[in-house]
Image (cartoon, rainbow, N blue to C red; front, side, top):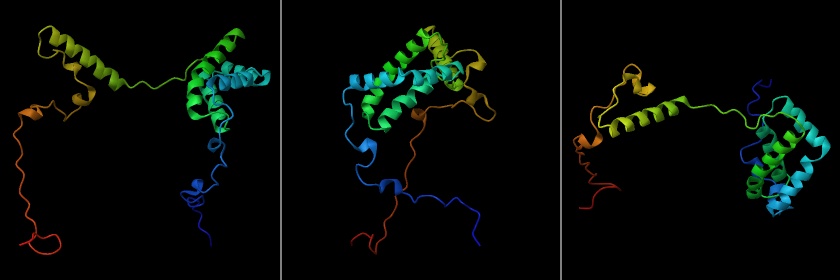
Length: 187
């Protein structure tokens, strides 16, 4: 009888570190060490009609250009064509070139993938600006009740009443050491 749980059916931890040193593409010297040469290499690949046709079709389908260029640039590093730092140096210029090629071909594209906005951060910034304006006008605090951050408006959470500097210092109790044993005080 074999258990149906397949969660332990995989490589042991550290198995990825047991391959022979130098057998991975990124462990050998790269083909291109100059960012200009690596850029030219990728331009030749992107300018290939079959490759560019795939990029154009994906752009027409609404795939952001950023999500197409990053894997192309990453694949060059993963295949050992250039180093990690060269990959980061050429990513921006490759992105710009691909966008220009799409524009020249008349293909509308979305340049960047949408990012999730952190509204609590924006609310805190607004509150900071209002507080700064109030202080510049000579007021102690802004007057609107809704200017508190959402986390302070929740039930059961109130503003701190005194600062840490106003609090009395806490006296620490003296801990006595044992008089015998390994950790004991010598007599």
